[in-house]
Length: 182
Ligand SMILES: CC(C)(COP(=O)(O)OP(=O)(O)OC[C@H]1O[C@@H](n2cnc3c(N)ncnc32)[C@H](O)[C@@H]1OP(=O)(O)O)[C@@H](O)C(=O)NCCC(=O)NCCS
Image (cartoon, rainbow, N blue to C red; front, side, top):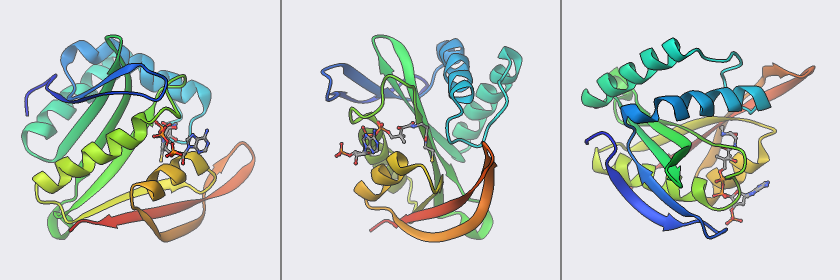
């Protein structure tokens, strides 16, 4: 798939037009702003340290090289010409080659209007196209918004690691969720 290729367009619940597409080099500064805004707000993602532009350049180069090898698929959402969300499916290796591991985040100010739902559905379509049989993801047990989204698109809880995270003085379980594809 080419960089910057448009995969789907739709209108969010607030009327804004959303373009779902693959990443391109021109996204670099938006991606940097995006990841650092998630770190700054303390979003329930694994990363806790801000990223430098150099690190982001390295990350994006790796993304393109892994995409070419079919190990990774990234799907971004654009509103008014700016990147507002990113998501990925990472293909497992070896005996897990049929499993896709999903990650997704939407920028503050663009949540709750259906972008996550459309992105998850599009990721699933892509997963089927490349022959994946199982989708898996992990989520902080207190991230009810994300859990609601994943349940809505057919994921079920299939595992839990107690006290997997320690955040703001409290332990939080990690929930594993999966969806088996037809
Ligand atoms: C979690 C996240 C990806 C959800 O994406 P989104 O675009 O906001 O989700 P949607 O608008 O498509 O809503 C999906 C469902 O979530 C639920 N939901 C929506 N807003 C919600 C809110 N404020 N609180 C709780 N649940 C909510 C609803 O069930 C909704 O389905 P419905 O609209 O049919 O009722 C997004 O909020 C996000 O990026 N959060 C920060 C980063 C993060 O937590 N990433 C996930 C890490 S595992």
